[in-house]
Image (tube, rainbow, N blue to C red):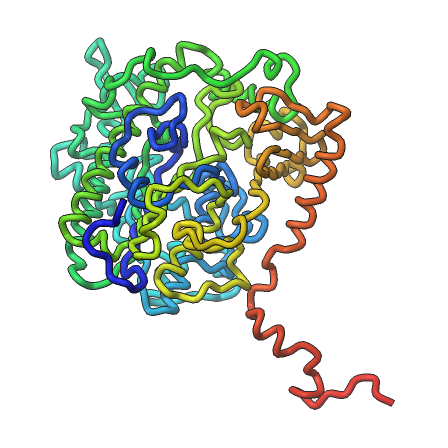
Length: 531
């Protein structure tokens, strides 16, 4: 399939970086999972670009995953290991690299970013103007930040918009965006899963997804022929699982697939998996009535996202922007919804760590590979170098740990992208730590997944091993099988070797290091140890 609008032969001028929150890969028809619904607009984007079949996040937790997406670095490097952990001020993000090239990176939606205010204050550091905004907003120039997890502050644009349209003046998010009217005519909060199937009080045209899409279209239209980079970060289908009509009952329980789980996981779980099953959301999703109530609403929220992606693509096409705009579509993690007897995400199962990743490259170099499914492993840390590469901005390899995906989008790669993906979990903030009586520094987990096996290393506990080829549902933990010892050893060593290769020397480029190698006499007239 040829790209539309007669693409010019130069680098992309614009970038639309779209992220959903908690979107499972197998919910999309272009990925063909058993739980997929028809998503024709995201399918269209995949047909225009390249779809990465095995894309993984570095953490199935919003904060660390997004920080990896925005910095191109793993949690062990950027040090944001959980939600609301401040990002150290010495970290650079996509917006900082673009600023060096004279470009802004606009934000519309959520980021989970928290600045290191204490660290800045302790050192007496501050910044003014655009640099100060980037420092306090994770590198972004804010069009509108809206995280969608709690009632909005007084200055929120979306709050103002809702009040102007007649919604509750005090608590419009809680009362209308995630609130419903119950069967008895009273208020029914969206925080309770039992109320998931009730329609939100808000009209669909005023909902979070519709509002953010409206604002994105207005922004793109307002830029005219000026180049732009926009991060459009949707709130949904993240909880609260609350959809406006008609999406709230577009699907029934019979349309949803049952969770992937086995009785052995319940009866003989790994210690960490076992305590995760004791979390409140896991106890809820272990009940059939819960997932049967929630999954159809989740499907409706995904369908709503797809419909509004269709609006975006339509606008880009009419405006002629598909000829010069790189589009990246992804999710910060998945959603287990009862898989493996778990709620939420976090644990390293495929439903949580494998995500959709679609890259539409307007370059003619990508024409021959449009609609191609890329089997190579990709990671969320690859998004920053991909965007920089597409814009013709040098990728700072001494900091960025991912790699540009354009060679695979264009069919120009001469080698596999990588041997494996790596993931992290710091469960120190979770009740699991208390159940296991672990200290706050004793709660690390790591994942290494290659073309066949998934290896999980747990601090203080035995490892886990799954054969994704023979057991794609990850129902049989093979780590205690005698024959698995060489596999465990190989993957453990690979994880150790990988750790040695992290980019921790971030203040000098590779070229600067090379220039200063054995240079004390040549550069500084220092003579050491000569007779």
